[in-house]
Image (cartoon, rainbow, N blue to C red):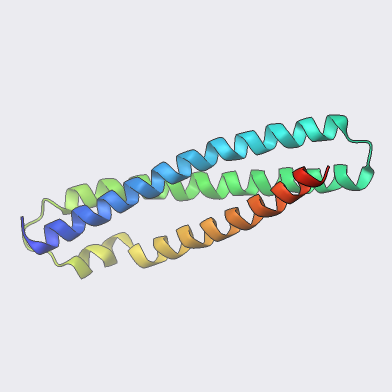
Length: 128
């Protein structure tokens, strides 16, 4: 196995890990949505109810973003598998072909946004 092929396989595994993390995020979003619904049924505070509605909107937006990104990563993962079989291709050509840097930046932005919303929602839940 040459260095380029090993690097392509490394990228392939990185995408598989990112996809697995996003699959776990889907479960977290489901649990948070269930918890928000439960909190709304037991809250008589209109301010809290409004904040919960906003969180539900955030969760819905996160899920949409996650679904689009995860789908694109699945396609990229398959491209990487196909590119790993090519003989004369450089790692930079592979990264350019799959638009790795843009995908990585979108993934990192998603992680930051998700972490911030999780942190704030946990504070809200603990304060009720």
